[in-house]
Length: 461
Image (cartoon, rainbow, N blue to C red; front, side, top):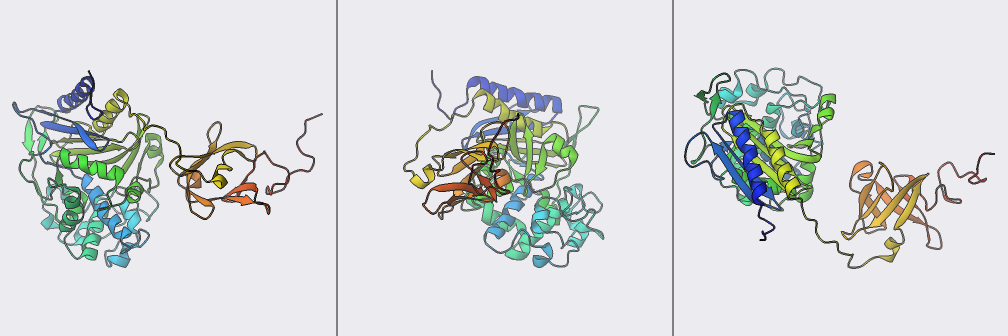
């Protein structure tokens, strides 16, 4: 018996169902629905519910809370890519008079703008947005509670400002811009600012009794860009594919990669926990893999979107309760279950179609001082330079077309690598951001900074 590459094995499907069943039962969620994406398509969907009969499917809306922030961040990155603004611009340049304008757009995206976590009372998640009609009502008299740019401090008002920025530049309401520029191009027709049937009702579960209390559903008004949206596992699965791969109709692969790149200084506890934040995306190291995405909560609802780009997998988990199941842990487990039970099959190795002799002659062993490095020319058109043993600085480099390469990651990200040639055309050494790499350690005659002792290598008598 064989299965298609897209189909999960029965044992894997049972393990996924078991995980969400435990989460729903132990977390006492009225309902919980989940989906797993692999290789760009949904390969599993499951649900558990306290109501007898048909459980929620991939078309039932739940409120997704702060996953909304990732959608808002996409809109801001689109403005950057169009050249309308720069992420280093202070907010004041495009949205004057807020009282928080010294924070840059990038700092607001990364929650390092120094703003308060919440708007002034009353609690914005359980009261009408009409109580906060102006930005000043959202920010209060003293918007900044920390020095700008120094600390990662999660801020809902910060994303209200980003939504207002989108409205100011586009000249249209945030939700309309989102529909035109993101939802419709990606086919997310079950994602909306207000609930559309079929949708789940939001509940509070009594902490000491198996009893329910309905939660109010409020229009968040100005705070909408921080947490307004409703969506489904089906739509969020498609959104996860976009966040992993990009889509030129919305954002390029490079721009979504930038969103997934750490952009906020982490506190000591965050370093220990392996958690940081990018541009509208949470980043964590869990179960030996790097996971990106976002969590969300509003009264009556919990949501989580978890993506492992390396595994080309994602998980979506939604529940209709104010607290209970830890959906971030559930999402990470769903990814882990599939990745471990059915590891990704790599693409076949294929050689280069053609090779430039001037590049091929650079391949092989090089030394930075006494540290041995290897330079490889790979089939994707890149070169990689990394230590031959132990930990050390390494990177892949893309060709620039002028005999130089630019680092793509790590310590050498953005640094220039070039081969320095002698008058006769032979290679003298590699120069990488002023570091000299030679074919032999401290090679005689090479332009090693500080020179090479004329007595050469020796022993101790």
